[in-house]
Image 1 (cartoon, rainbow, N blue to C red):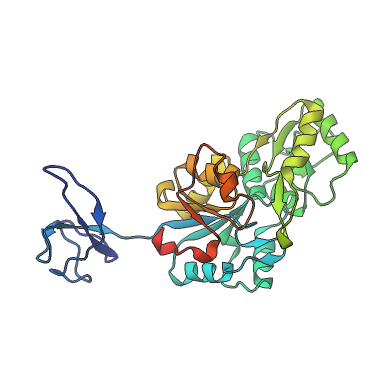
Image 2: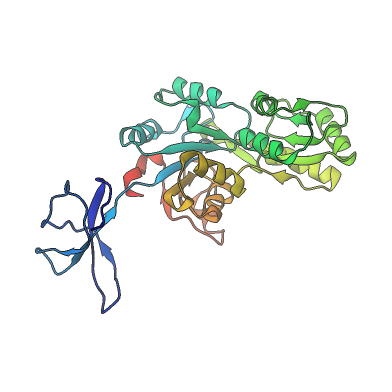
Length: 315
C-alpha cells in the first residue's frame, strides 16, 4: 500500500486505450472519503474511470513587483486582495524584483504604506541582493572593492557581503537605477572599466512603469551609456538571468516546475521564468501588452489583465 499526505485528492484518468493514459479529469471518487488515507488505484463505482490518488499542492508563487503590485507609488487595483489570498491559502510566495534601489525592509514598509500587511523581509529578493551574493561568490580578495552607480539599497547589500565602496582602482563597477545619475558618474565608471574593473549590471530594464500610466528610464539606459563609451558589455545578474530564479526557488525550497513566475515584462520576467523551468503568467498592468507579447518567439502560460484576476490555487 502506498500512502500520501492528507492533502491528496482523487483525479480520474480516462484511459484512451490499452496501456495509455488520456486526459486527466478532476472527478472525485465517492467510493472512499477524501479524508481517508490515499491508496493505490481502485475502481470508482460512479464511473468507468480508474481513480489515482495524487498529492494535490498549489504551486509556489514568485512575483515581480513594479507593474504587478504597484506602479510607482500607486497600488494596482486588486493587488491587496491577491496578496491576502496568498496568505489566506498559505501559498508559498516570494517577491522577486529587479529593483535595486530599496532593501527588503524598504519594500515591506512601502507595501504597508499602501495598505498591505502581513509580510516580512523574508518575502523579498531584490536584484541588489542577488548581485551582492554573486559578487561575493566570484571574488577571492579579503577586501574586494566596487564603484557603485546606484542607490542605498545596492550599497547596503554590498557592504553586507564584505565589499568596500571605492573610487581608487575598484575591482568592479556595479550599475543600477539611480535617481542621481550624472555625467561625472559616467566618466568615472568608464575610466575604471578601461583600467580593468569588471562591469556589472543589476538588471537590464530600460524603463520602469510609474503611476498615471507613464514610464521612466531605468538601469538599462544607464548601462547602455557606459557600454557605448567603453565597448564593454555588462554582466547582468538580475532577471532574466536564471541565477535570480535559482535564488528564489532555493529560498522557497521548491523545484522550478513547482513554481509560477508572475510578471509584467516579456523580456525579463517571462523569459527568465521560462528558461528556469517555471510556469509563467503575464499581467498586462505594467510594461508588456497583448500587442507587444506577440512580437516574442516565446509565450507565457497564462495572461491576465492584472493580479486581481489570479487565483493562486488554479495555476
